Image 1 (cartoon, rainbow, N blue to C red):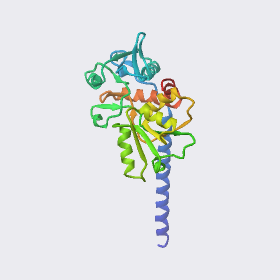
Image 2 (image 1 turned 180 degrees about the horizontal axis):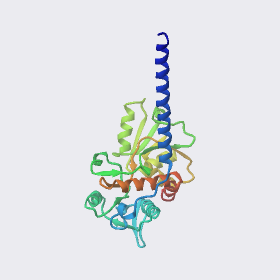
Image 3 (image 1 turned 180 degrees about the vertical axis):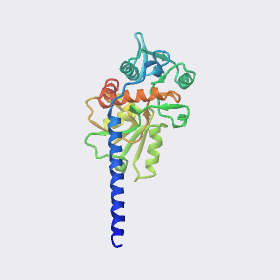
Image 4 (image 1 turned 60 degrees about the horizontal axis):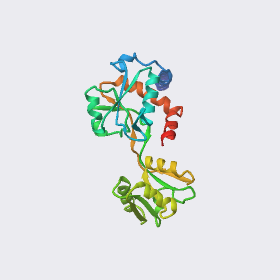
Length: 268
């Protein structure tokens, strides 16, 4: 009779070991399965009209603009590369920004690539891809600045565009840290001028404005400190899940191999 407790313990240990082995085998199988690169579905399953129709608003350089030789910009390059990777002919459909989502809904385009911010209020009608660019606010400071974040602004000064998202964030910071001197300007470029010539300790602007400004002032050694996110992504209709999966796979490759970073450096 005394061996029964030991038998029960042994049985429990054996069961636990068996379950652990099966769980490990399942995890290894899932890892292996996910690591296998599977071919994309046939082109017609992704793009029923035989081409990748991309909706874009070509009035927002450097992401998309129209010239004598056609459309150009970061989003144009990105769409062209993704289409090539998928083996699909590409056609850009240029329209006003307000018409982008309607064109997707009306099946006039297959995907939107147009500096499109992820809008969580639209997730019941569109699927967004993984983000490829962050246009959020960033602190721009000289490389030798003691400022490494919001809390370091106390007693210093901050330049920003009046009435912008940066203005709103600066006001929020003033309620959370010891006072700093706000310096509002009419344009983000003027705020950056103030930081560059020393009239302000730092500038708070969107990442795109900062990158474009620094292209024109490459002798100014700075640090960029992101403070908020504004994520750009591709968008497809919610009934085009296979298309989204294929786009995400190709976009992950481009993010992983540095292609997207190179496009950002090229245009921004």
